[in-house]
Image (spheres, rainbow, N blue to C red):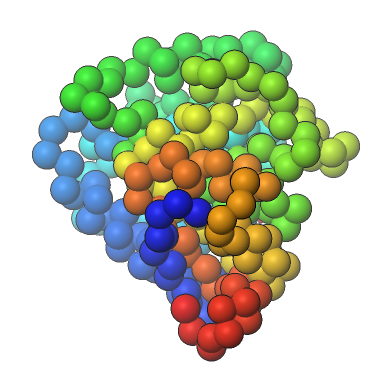
Length: 247
Ligand code: 6PG
């Protein structure tokens, strides 16, 4: 990693999600003009955070635009839809206006959906050196994937491409993912990873002074401020590598 990231470690997923919710409320509250562009992650990791956010009454959701880092090629009603999960746990309970939700329509086919999402993101107003996103949330798979960027299976894309069609293994199926270029084009990047099964992957992501081996490392290098939210399990190998009981 090129910059020193912030690392927040708590005993478990819930305890680690609480400071993330608090901080996100503060970031949205600090928006003075325009809308806060928030890119959500999929998987199960962010669910406690989404539920905490939905329960808060101090966030003005009319100031927030929602995007996704990746999507599976399933209808939004499918339990594995990343948009579907966010809709159930955050968007609907928080009554987020539909026109603030920019989901990846991956059920229309990965290539078509990726092209449409690229075009939509590329058309977002920039100016004043503004980055694509204000905040990107990412998770981490035990196999080292982030969004739907799978180590060793990344499709080729040309510079400037913001979203592409991709696939994981047979179980993970076809997907649409933002590229490291798009995911890293953010003022803040928060990586949430919980559970001992992710400890070794987290430790690899923190290895310094070599070429990136995990997709998350390429995202981290481009992003502004980087914050890791870990629990005792996922930070275990990192703590051992540093020879410390706390980080
Ligand atoms: C997805 C993702 C993915 C996820 C990790 C972690 O849709 O699968 O966006 O990158 O963040 O796989 O998944 P869990 O949170 O379920 O462990």
